[in-house]
Image 1 (cartoon, helix red, strand yellow):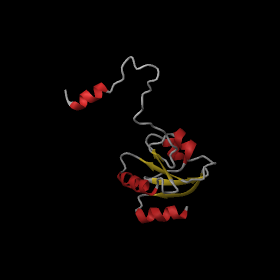
Image 2 (cartoon, helix red, strand yellow):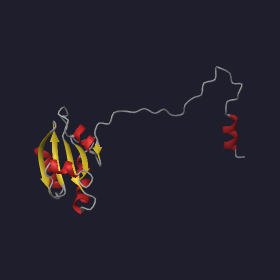
Image 3 (cartoon, rainbow, N blue to C red):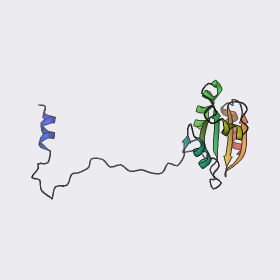
Image 4 (spheres, rainbow, N blue to C red):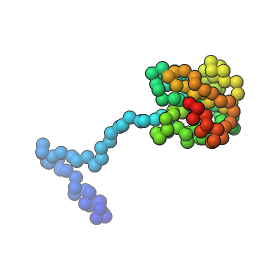
Length: 142
């Protein structure tokens, strides 16, 4: 046996330690509220709860995408880089193949389509791929 194993084994409490024995926890865990959210692959319930929430003052960008759409695969990481704890925007992605009725409700006719919601209402929208500078400009208009 190694010295470490022997030391750990001898440090175990015995069965006769009595009621005064209290195990010491090495670590404790706690949870805190997340200041921002990325709602990736949101379903209709999550969409209704967050994007259409009239009481929410923090804007949410809803990225309507499809797995087969190559521009969508490039745009989503760009949008992620502009949303987060340090920004004043949340990001939600909705797969149009999984929720075509949701896409139709917001007149998504081409991909990618990004719709900005604030206080439960549509504030702005763009269709097609946009670069980093265009996304910053779009966010500035909100």
